[in-house]
Every structure is written in structure tokens, then in C-alpha cells.
Image (cartoon, rainbow, N blue to C red; front, side):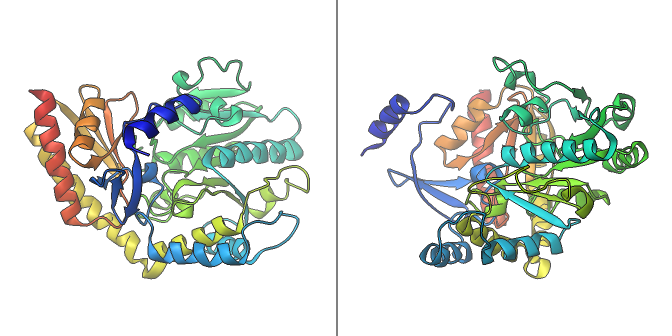
Length: 401
């Protein structure tokens, strides 16, 4: 089928939940993808922070091929080796004692909310059910995860959402302290608000939140769906802040492109989940776990990729600042950590995104639409960045004429 025919038929058949670009992608390798007509693109969105090792990394492909030939799926009524291997890697390299596998970030956050509530109700009584979240946060689109998402634009049409949710400004620990009551169960935060605009908090923000949670006897849930698996230059973003959460959620980059999510927590909290309190048919699927094991082994190997992410980030931000210097009245700020980077404009970024796509660069938006979002694979090289910067510069010139 030709490109126009695929797009036309897709528009007819799919429930219209996406505003898609008129682009049909056929294959990818490393930091590049090709459309159905053979045109090449630099992918600096990477499936929105999913393809941390780029497209079709050899070790991940081989792990998936091997597992598909051995065992594709069985129920969680039985044990499998890939699940165990993945659990061991995650627990060894995190704060956690226990893990639960699911299929997505929203599902992981949904499970984390359930776990926090049942643990706190078991320990303190039925009135400990409220959550504190931050404005501009994004935790998913299921009813629970949507209820703790601090952006009203995602709520419209789905009210009433879950009760017992309070929102406070991000990067304001005093606001959290003032919002805590005898009914508070947990605080849920992203270490860096990604969908909300690549908002990086002060270095002392999470330590102060951790202190508040400890003092008040409430849980701290960190949503690391987008910040985890090396995205910020550490395996998990909480490591930058010198604290540990009580519960952490993962997805996106965890499977290297294959869908998988996870909830990580400590022994005492995990004990609140017992048989039949929570489950997932496809959670911990052998193929997804094999892919995640290969991904994590690559990210963790000798610590090279994590260190490299921090080094290449400095180069990328330096180049972006050179663009900012050329358009000081149009570019307000460059911010981010590792390879989760935002460029805030004084106008809506969608035309820039479209121009870049025309010229062979895939990027996205965040926040209110004025932030260009860069989440490239961790394997990008300086020449990839130079090419992306050149395309961005040309796009800005054309749009701002």
C-alpha cells in the first residue's frame, strides 16, 4: 500500500484518539528511521523516551528472537526465567526489595496507587486514602492515574474522577507540608515533569519532600516512567537527588521498545499486596522481560552509557544554547537533565516540529505546546547532534521569517 492509502484507511478504521503527523514509518536502525518512501529521519523523540538504545539494537533483537522461539506467553500462575532475571537486575540496582510487572506506565501508576492505599489502610485505618500530586504532572490516562494528573486538559469529559486528590505547585515542598492531613496516604511526583514541560526541580526539593513524608508517616511514590532507565544519566533519576522513594514506577525505556511496566517497592509495603489483590495477565511476559534484561544489561555495562549520557548531554545543551543566542527573543529557556531536554519558546512549537520533520528530524512538544521536547536514544553521537541543530536552526529561520 502507498503512504496516502495507509493514512486514509487508518483515519477511517481507528478510534480518533491521536493527532498524527502524515508520516508512515517502515524501519529503524540506531538513531535513524525511514518512512515508506525511503526518506531518512534522525529520531530525537525515540518513541517518546522509549528507545533508549535506539532502534532495533542488536542485543535486544537477539534476546527477543531467542525468547520468541522458546516461550512467548504463559500465565503468572507459573514461574519463568526471564521474569526472575529482570527482577534480580532491577532489585540489585535500586532501593527496592520487591517488584511487580505490568504493561505500561499508566498501569504501573495505577498499581502503585492501589498498593499505597491498601498498605496505609492496613497500617493506619480506612481513612488514610488521600493523595497529594503536583500541578502540571502527568501520570497516565486510566481513571486512577488520570485522577492524580495535574493538568485539567486531560480531565475534561471524564469527570468525576477519583476523590481524595490534592494538587500543589511543583518544586514547592512547603505546599506539600501544608497539604498533608490525617487522611493523607502518599505523595506522588515525577522527579522531572516531562509531559508537563521538562520541569526540573531544585536540588533540595525531593530531599525536603522525603523529609516531610518521613515526618508525617506517609509514602513517597516516584513516577520514573519517563525519567528511568538511564534517561537522565543515572539509571533512575532519584539517584541525582540523594533520596529513595517508597514506591517507584517504570515503563517506557524499560523494555527497549517492547511494552513493559514495573512497580518497585520495599518489603514491608509489598506485603500489603496478597494473592488476588492485584494482577496482570500479560505483566512480566517472557518476551518483554527478555527484552528488558538485554536493555538493562546494555545500559549498565561498565557504567559507560550512563556516563556517556551525561557527557553528551552537556554537548547537546551547549549547542542548543548557541541557537538560543541567535534567537534570544524567541527562545526563553533550555532545561533538562541527561537526554531529557526541553527548549521553551515564546510561541507554540508545533510549526517548528513540522518543519523539522520535513527536513528529516523527529522531535516533539511538551507542556502547553511551547516546549520542544528532545528525548533521543542514549547512543546519539556529536555528529547526530550537529545535524539536528542545523535542521532546528533552519526550521526556526523559516518559521520566524
